[in-house]
Image (cartoon, rainbow, N blue to C red; front, side):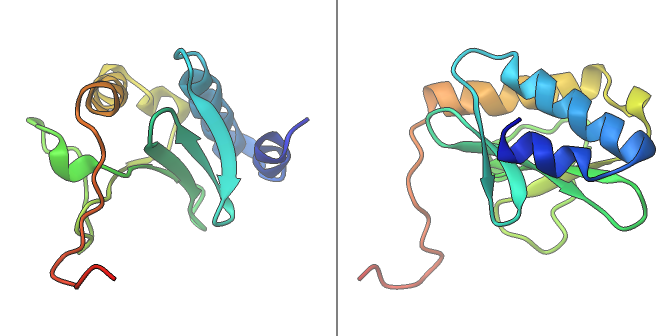
Length: 126
């Protein structure tokens, strides 16, 4: 069992099931790798795609690192005053639906087609 799976199995109930389902879903895509970074599971291919953030209330945030670049026509992503990262909060296993799949596919498409360039947000690059 790797570090990400150990992390997931430390949770209980439906929260664990949501984390495990999302973990397996992300790893089902070609060349996607899970890494334990900043105390949470991150999923990477060419660049960071998303991460899973369990909340104290038993929900799980599926957070996309390049969400600012998404079309998000259904307005599913919550940016919470963040500049680039948008999340969708999942409280039940059946919340992992077609809308979530479309967000994941959009994240993977962006990762494949638009090279990641570091955004400096007004700071001078040193």
